[in-house]
Image (cartoon, rainbow, N blue to C red; front, side, top):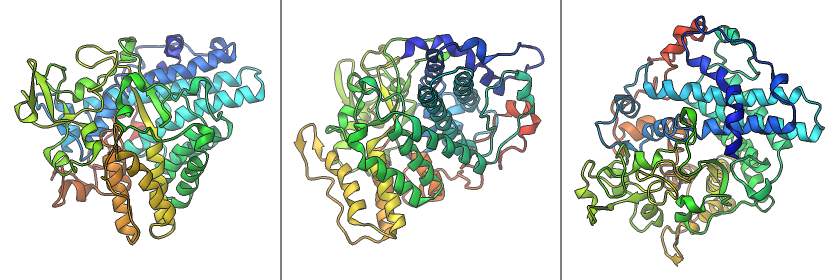
Length: 504
């Protein structure tokens, strides 16, 4: 798929104007979709271009997903020599000129611009209805996927659902209320659920299907505390898992082996990287193995995003997922050493992305990983949580979904363990929901979900200031830190985006 990306990178350049201060100094002519789109294949390639922006250093290759990890209570800064912008995100003392935000904000709008271009381009062609609707559905999925991340990070922000063919229009754009943005996200995912196929050829998981759209609808409804609809969508995916080819991967470790990541049945939607390949603008540049790897070890890394010791110590050693998730020893100068002897940061490191990077360079960069933006285990746990809220407590159905996840965790590379045990009945709603949130914390550890769980359940004061905090941050402010600041450069360019988010 990636070989088609470069042709349509220019379609998404307008997104960069949401991060450029020199609009007056760089006049550009109008773009006309009818001059760029001649066939349905051109529309499809434009969508591939959007995927290319997602699989870039600014988004899934480092900046955006690292910010998500550092914002959680599962990952702390390791090497404090890393740039200050990362420490500010981690320590909840960032300002509105944070370098990480300045890098990933315009790239999300480039993804959105490419999706809008594809939709506009399809409208200029006299395509068969089914072909047109399928292509538009895929582009609308990509747009909704992008805004779903942006709105959770920033709240009110510019919502652009049309192709900007005149850059001058950018100067007139203002913020859209968060509630309105969510309406657009839901409408796009609903359309995608209606018109996307059940599966793609070769069972590819880096393009969405009806099941993908329904899974993300469940996530949006869960975020909005609309538990009946979240339950309905997640249960629909579970009941139709055979139709979509979904199931849990028997061995948890295989989820994080880059050489096995293509078309994995647990992947609901994956961001695809191609080993040892790089494009312009950071395209296909995956640095997460290096960012989470061990500085000074034979298998090189940078010790930037490293779990705190309480994260490691409180995770039961009997859980196979702990062994998969952590590197607590490493070869250094050819000799295996425990984490207490690591050169830079004497803590166990994240193993999910560095242990089996496939075709990559010596630092674990430019890997073959396909990162699961959503996997089937997530759907099972979303369904269980929503069901508990709908039924005011656990049911046999919701307990069964959690136990599916736990049963897989007991399979340690073919050896059946007795831990974690099945959940039994008798819990009240609060205890069961807390159990699910804890199960999500472990099952999805270091996979960029934890911050969103903390935010939607308003757990910040508990997890950062509570007596059992895994990563204490006394500077966390619930009135400020559930949102990041809009980049200062955006407000300087376009005062219509004021006011800034509270506290910045």
